[in-house]
Image 1 (tube, protein in one colour):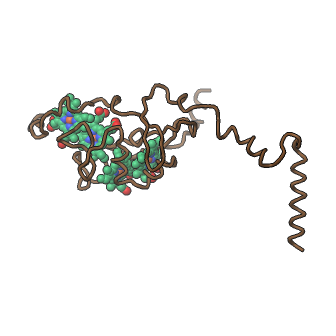
Image 2: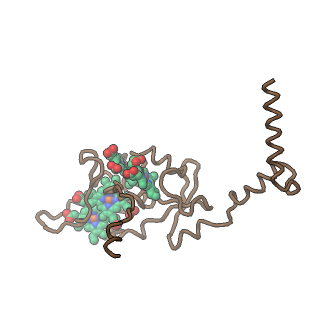
Image 3: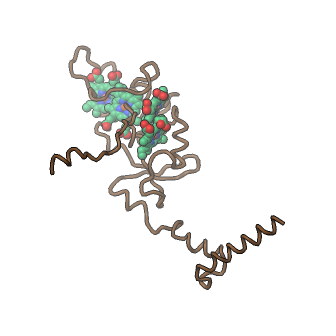
Length: 205
Ligand code: HEC
Ligand code: HEC
Ligand code: HEC
Ligand code: HEC
């Protein structure tokens, strides 16, 4: 009994919905869905419109292919080997008051777990260094982060962590880890919501 009522009821609802539209436009519900969702699959815009003059490289990770910003041309002190052409020990001058890279302070994990040499290879500064001693190109520094932050890396590959440039417009382009997190101090500062200052408004009346 109940089932019959349910069916007839839903048929009534369907009929009511169908009446609101111009039935002649579509031959079936499927056709209507296909037609009206076209703009989602092909929005007619390209992510290139949002990239501006950012140079990108294409990467493929875990079946996902997308663009990320290129880094080396953006880094102030690249190529490192312009200065790092001899062993670090010879470059470090004891008692010198002005140290190179004085502006870089490490505040990431604790000093037992991490120091400069965790990520930078004194023998070849032009590439970063994996925990097992393999070189990682500066343009792919997300692989460095992925060693210890796998869950964020997995999310990022799928598009859930970090930002896609131009939303889901094709070709997919995403910010890379260091675009948002300074590798030396990766914390993102907490922010207060913007507040309307009614007091200031009063004073200016
Ligand atoms: C303009 C020259 C110059 C450039 C370019 C340069 N370095 Fe250095 N770097 C130095 C000098 C000099 C030292 C020795 C540190 C000191 O003054 O005690 C040094 C030291 C370092 C150290 C060791 C720091 C420490 O406290 O143990 C790291 C790591 C390092 N550099 C990374 C890099 C990387 C990575 C690049 C490229 C992205 C780079 N450097 C580019 C001059 C340079
Ligand atoms: C967690 C890994 C990690 C550690 C630890 C680390 N770095 Fe870096 N460093 C990076 C990455 C990744 C970049 C490249 C960032 C980018 O793409 O701009 C970088 C960039 C640099 C640069 C080039 C900056 C520029 O804009 O040209 C210097 C110099 C440098 N690091 C020195 C150091 C020194 C000195 C230490 C220790 C005090 C250190 N790093 C510790 C990952 C690390
Ligand atoms: C050798 C392991 C290691 C590597 C490599 C590494 N991290 Fe971390 N990172 C840590 C540890 C440990 C912490 C501290 C975790 C905590 O406080 O909960 C941390 C903390 C962080 C945090 C959170 C900071 C906070 O307290 O909010 C961010 C963001 C972060 N790392 C980003 C990165 C990025 C980006 C890279 C690559 C450039 C990277 N990490 C590379 C080990 C690593
Ligand atoms: C578009 C910017 C952006 C990109 C790209 C990005 N992150 Fe984040 N990340 C954030 C923000 C925002 C937070 C949240 C910070 C908070 O809540 O305090 C965060 C948080 C984190 C944290 C702290 C733990 C957590 O989930 O709150 C880690 C670790 C981290 N990111 C690692 C990474 C790694 C690794 C990559 C690259 C694979 C990456 N992030 C790419 C913006 C970004």
